[in-house]
Image 1: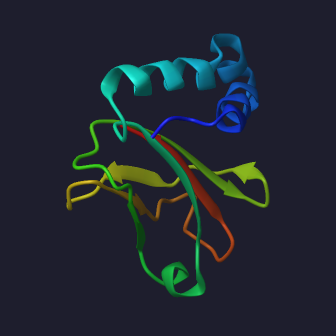
Image 2: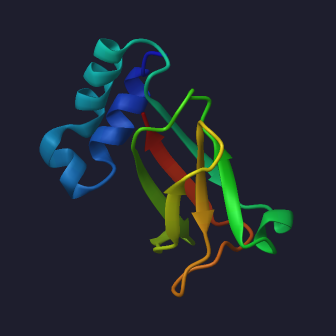
Length: 113
């Protein structure tokens, strides 16, 4: 999957660190080198049903997750739950932590390859 111009621009502007390295442009280039579907990005809004669970499992669509870059937002502010590659290939699991537990309308976003 090729990145759209909007996705590249959004990634380039998402924070100071990504602006310094033009993250969207770099990731688009990596995706082109690795082949279609080798790099994915997505976001997920936590539902009421997931809120009561001790974890949220995100399905990436990849055969396996080699690495990922997570972002967890509550009302626009970043939090730090525990993220891990899922026990099922191609998934990422977000676990409750001492500082953050998923709440309805929290946003979980990631870039994975």
